[in-house]
Length: 398
Image (cartoon, rainbow, N blue to C red; front, side, top):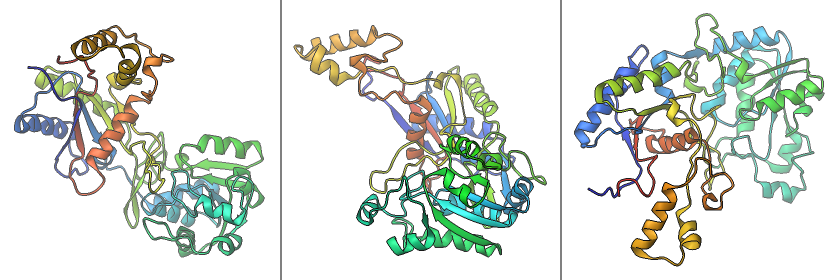
């Protein structure tokens, strides 16, 4: 039978995962049951993706605010610390900030503006234009910022993050000073001891600080890279990718996921004879057009994936072929010409006019975004996503 459906993504319902659960077994059983109940066949190169949250839960990869405080204290001692470029998030940063404040003497908090790294805005770019403020050169005190822009409530959460972060720090009994700058060097006018809290720009920030005289430099990726008094940890990313779990703890990004994805692949192969690809995903890599928020607050989209998900798509733009190469053809002749072109395409289409507009992002970033949108972040209860037909092209199944 001719196949008439291309890519499909199914969110698979699963039990609530707890520490110590055999996640390999649960994933495989869920996939096999879904195939039986829904009546689809497991095929080679299907994709099983599972959210990082349940991996971390099964690992019990949690840490207390006290553990964050202890590691911060070990690294900075009794010093005033510049906490620079945090994102504006109750879920992602508020608990971390409590731990940092609990472990240091005093904090100078430096916020980027008009928005944080992932697009949460304090003010709009139009507000800056209206006030004649240049975000690339102007360093503002909290008083100056308030005089210019007043209260700054987040459009989605209704939170004034300037006041909120100040209240978290002061609740730990220490003094807080807040400044606004997009230049990492600005913090060195206040302290030479800096904790960088940015995610994707962290290596550049550290490099700039080191070049210009910072004496102590750590990032969130350096905090909890090993257990503190039996806590969870992440060897590669530290606190990056963590989420608030309770009022006194955070869930960390999962550790050592490669063995898990390889194990799931092997078990599905044993059960079905088919080789599926498997990946762990966190945030998708996409930007909200209304709120201007870039979703990726995790350090990577996928911390682990099987070998078949390495690389980028190698695709031809069908509309380019139809409008250019074969614009004189119609119907079956056009179909046959396009199919023949696809079947003869090379392994590397970089620079080819026929590939323009196909946006060759990493496969794991694209599939992670598809998975994140499919599973959602609320109460759907579908932490596994089963994707079929992702690697098909126009000629498959004809």
